Image 1 (cartoon, rainbow, N blue to C red):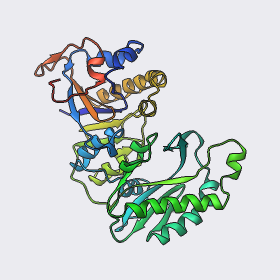
Image 2: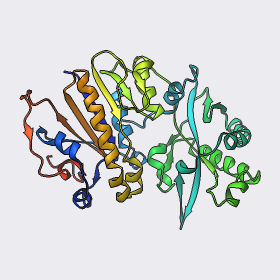
Image 3: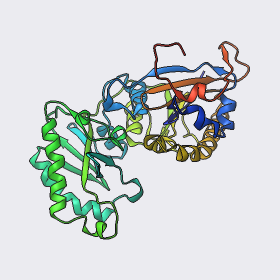
Image 4: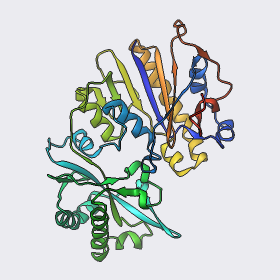
Length: 357
């Protein structure tokens, strides 16, 4: 029986605040789906602090690669963006803002003030020199940066998605070449500073583009065939994982409100509406994002039913955990039904997974 799988990153709330936050939430769609669904199943996904905050990537890496180590994202993002096949190791480079907060440094995505094409081009020359000195070649694809090298780089860098908003510290990078990684970041930062590339931004009271984050490195490999026949995701790496399982490119799309025209089978959508607010622990923004998320869920489920799919799998992730519920058409009676007293029974991230759920 094919399933419509909806992954909701950032939907699990810290258990201590979940009841209070959800008391102010209006969730008619999710509430209706939970009524009569299978009891939720909890799965710990994050074994190290390096992945905390990116539990959705850990969930998807297990689904597509059947692995539980640090996800390899860069070569798959390169492929999903249309980059040519490479036999080299590939790392992703993202421009960012390093923010000083008291006695520590934070990574800021600049999401609301992204660099223009001209700002990317102005910084590419210095980045290319620093990359070459570190043994890499810079690959610029539109406004995206990647680094390639023939030999493995023994570095485990904290994924961008989990480092955002977090302190840059000892857990941010590990491995034999971690000092080389730190030196490359420092060299880029200093070269941009000396060149005065942020003068115009600073004069306009805008956050400077004062550094890069390098992560996701590895080689592209074919992944085992997947049960999914359609995947919707804005994240290029996720789309790259789907493509690496042998899915046709027409079946793998950025997030939209309808499913690609694909053969009958399981379908997956990754809905990140709550992720930024969850990362920032801004529960007001989290609540404000719910109506649009619910509307998209309703449209995708309606479209799935138009394809003859009656089973809906809702997987919500938090900082370290996933909680999954399954809802089938009322005609199916082989699952034990679960009557949820409140949404907190699903959307509160458990703190002790040794206890039954």
